[in-house]
Amino acid sequence: MLFFAHLPLEAGVIAVFLCQNDPGMCDDWDATAGANRAFVFRGPLSPATVPTEGETLLGAVTALRPHPADTPTTEPVLGRLGGEPHWIQGDETPGCPSCTGPMAFTAELEEGADFETSANFGGGGLGYVFHCRPCGEAAFLWQR
Image 1 (spheres, rainbow, N blue to C red):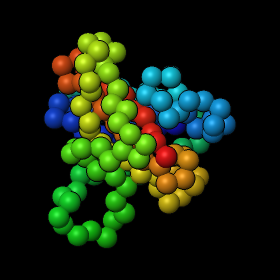
Image 2: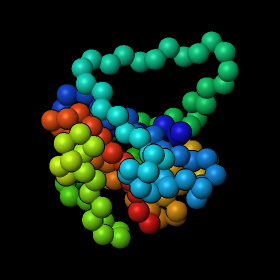
Image 3: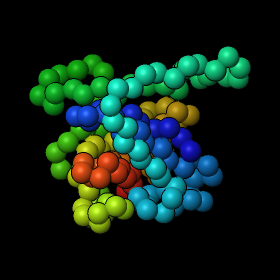
């Protein structure tokens, strides 16, 4: 699975992963089909140690930082935190797997400009991150 995003929360982060193996061969647009995973990590976090062997592609690493919507920036903006989702195909808010209640919208993510390191949402799609605060569950899906 492709590590896609690390999003800040009040008490931790959400890490988002999606299937990018043979695009179209896994149901990576569905929050519950198993091709996407989002995890909530709470408490203090520390960076992982860089492996001493193998290849680390630092050129493929980007950072998502909160940016006020009313402040101009020269940095590329590839989504937003909070608010309401701008659904392309219609509301698909996932239910929490623990309590079955609707999950809270957390972030909307866009494809990046570099096809080698960006997520594939079918060209022009949007990714949607949700989480259930009481249960500590998270989900990810996309639409095109």
